[in-house]
Amino acid sequence: MPELPEVETTRRGIAPYLIGRRVTGVILRRPDLRWPIPPEIGALLPGQRIDAVERRAKYLLLHTEAGSALLHLGMSGVLRVLPPDAPVGKHDHVDIALERTSTQAPRILRFTDPRRFGCLLWQPPGETHELLAKLGPEPLTDAFGGDLLWRLSRGRTAAVKLFLMDNAVVVGVGNIYASEALFAAGIDPRRAAGAVARERYVRLAGEVKRILAWAIERGGTTLRDFLSPDGLPGYFFRELNVYGRAGEPCRVCGTPVRQAVLGQRSTFWCPHCQR
Ligand SMILES: [Zn+2]
Image (cartoon, rainbow, N blue to C red; front, side):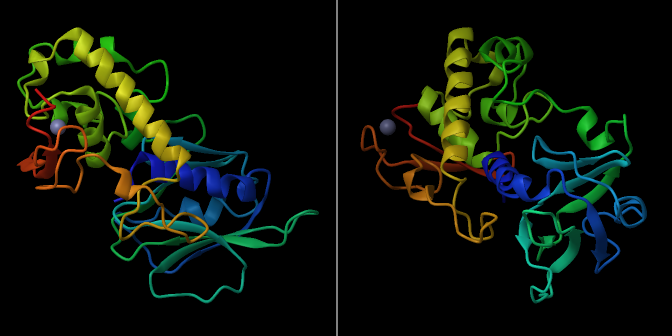
């Protein structure tokens, strides 16, 4: 599943082709993805200029004066910028056509999503879509830090890993990055969130920021379903410390990495390095 770094990599990949350009047409090859595609996309978007491409959590927003197209890549979604005559595959559900400019040939922004867990929705100007309304802070901003984690976790008995993956606490810390950040901070992912001390949360928040920034720098993780906007796979999956390494030696101490299911997601940790 694309996580925050992949979505941010996608944003950075497509933004230069979109910003300042006018939409000349929208092709919807099916009426729905995960949810029905609202009629505003086809009615209001053509003719509009894309003023900004924003990421909020794992959503991408294409902002125009008439409103914003809100996209989520779901489990297997990919956005690519292609020539208008690119051959259409059976999972290519949406094309947003972009005008020719003095410096750029006409292009289409194509949304491909074999499993259709992604979405394309509409946010009217000046409003915040309900999917975005209750989200916690962005992990790479100053609004997120160890003190916030410590404050919100008091009295919580849920495992610290599930607490860290709660979008109301902080957005975009998915399974891979939660596992890696907890390893880097030396915290057992099964520990009750309310039992983790303040200074350990300060360290954890720092590791979350460091690892996400590092992943974005490298273009996101390599996952089967994910390709970066230029069609190349990400390339640092092999550098992960615990995620996907059950039974293999910890890179720090050599103890076999353990795996368990926590909140229906696979969790990996080193029983020696993480307490
Ligand atoms: Zn270890």
